[in-house]
Image 1: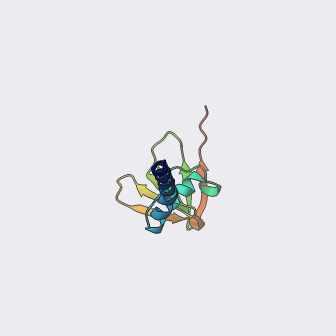
Image 2 (image 1 turned 45 degrees about the vertical axis):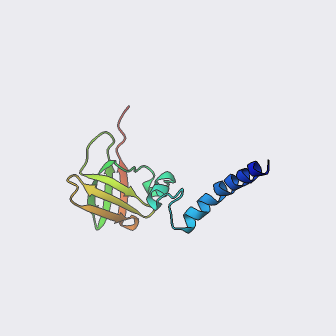
Image 3 (image 1 turned 90 degrees about the vertical axis):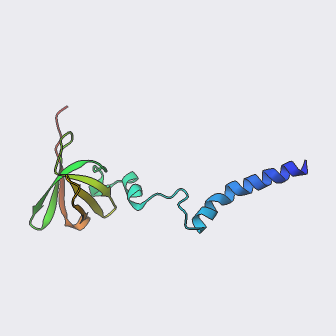
Length: 114
């Protein structure tokens, strides 16, 4: 009877301490990247943008205008959506750009009729 209780206590202790041990060792127990967390809690200017979505980017007076047209292929693809930046890659995958939020003038979405 005592061995069973000892085993149960040991198992419970392992369940409780496993996440703590993972975090203390620098591991990634239940770790979510900054970009993934931003994507899950998307609000504000980047709320309608998703990773993998294609967009067109135009420069106007030193700032960027982003055009989203659902269902069409555009020149750039969104690689990452952060809290304060947008990472895009061109069609060939040759150039990746990080666009800070302060350099974005507008995000225009074309609403297609249903």
